[in-house]
Amino acid sequence: MEATPIYETRRLLDEYLLFHYGTADEIMPWSFGPREALDFPVRTVRNLIDSEILPQQARALDLGCAVGRSSFELATFCESVIGIDYSHSFIHAANELKASGFMPYKAAQEGSLTQDLIAHVPADLPRGNVHFEQGDAMNLRTDLGSFDLVHAANLLCRLSEPQKLIARLPELVAPGGQLLLTTPCTWLADFTPPEHWPQGTTRDWLKQHLSTHFTLAAEQDLPFVIREHARKFQWTVAWASRWVRR
Image (cartoon, rainbow, N blue to C red; front, side):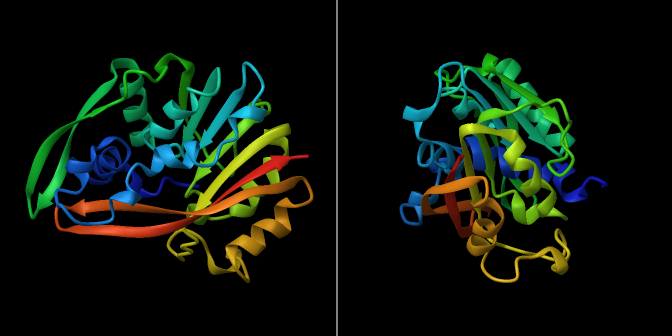
């Protein structure tokens, strides 16, 4: 599988740095707009996780971690976190943020105009507990082991063969562990051949494939907003779910 070129561009890297680390005013410079859709990489962890059933010294895996905000958030609940993304550009940025705690980038304004910003990892997050690596969610290295928590936000409908990851999940999540999934159910032929799309709803498809090994413990709708430039935004609602490994 070759890297999707779009995920190696500087423009998309900057867009994701803003999505993951931008303040409310940096992302949405208006007194109106869907601000409840901000901080999605934080909410996919905090809104879904059941911290009371996590064991001490818990291990977490963040698949499709992008530039790492959710991975750092997971480190507040877990002793160690591995963040994996297919984009070399995203992983390079995540490692820079881990090392220094900040990274300069540019937010698109309009046309060729940009705004200089700095992504900051919140000071109270334990950056040293997180390890980032480049990898393919459909062909993960065999020595990863199992985890008390696996987080995969908006990843499934960007895989060419999502069934490969779904088949690996029972091995990745330890018995009693949690699987946190979100998806906007945006199936596009550019990423996933139509023959690999769900035949019905994504929710029913996941229940069909996961219910042998997992119990659906919670679900909710999580809005998110991605800024393309100062006057254009993508507002989307992801279906979010928490599953417990039997």
